[in-house]
Figure 1: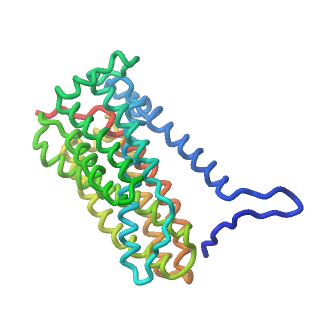
Figure 2 (figure 1 turned 45 degrees about the horizontal axis):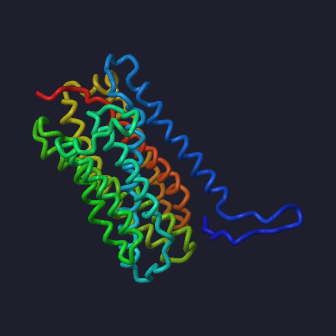
Figure 3 (figure 1 turned 135 degrees about the horizontal axis):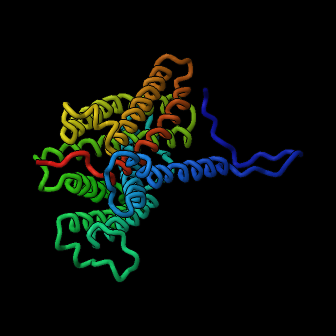
Length: 336
């Protein structure tokens, strides 16, 4: 399959001029709406029959965390792929318009929403009067929430500046804050858990965000050896990222669900059920990635790998949403 860049408009006697990108925009909006249903409706399905109680507003919190994770993937992926593009013999200087300024604002809104929940003692506030901003400074989670708010604000400003690469530092601060937040000091070996989450979240952002931006770059500059070379270079790095994501994900799961109980907890706890769904999704993504790599190497037109890669990035979007749900659900065991 050869990628063909859409023209500005096509007119004929049978109908009016069709505006480019409208169909894609509608498709993206529909997919986003469907994706939002996963964190909103997922908790009730995951918790059904487990006897576990979820925190108040778990659906909204899961949605906010999914938006936050997506807002991390986009700038990290853009910086990553643009760097890969500059290393090619035939440099791809003409890159698509950055989405980072918009995702930075989305991440800021999500971080503000999550910080408001932390400020009320992990209860959903029903008015501005219930939000205790000063109280955020009194707890570890509150301070980390403030770090994420300020970091996303800085990232959004950096993305609109003349040096957008500087957004890497505030985005990195968000990843570190998320890794620390996921493993409180009362947990057994919290630094080990934070280190695993740090590597896992970084690699996942590079994989999902990198593939999205690589496909946008190919669509922006269709055809040519440079496009196939960029996709091939990304595929080689993605193989390493998948290995690291798998290793850190399995290790983290074993820390929270010991090997002697993991099979039972995968079906009897909300966390385990959601984790199992994520595993199946990642396996499907890996199959799509392998399919794209085979096409890239063996097909007469290497850019025919675009089709399975596009399906892969949609599946990765679902993985990001499910990950947001996973972080909002109660853990399956208590640390001793």
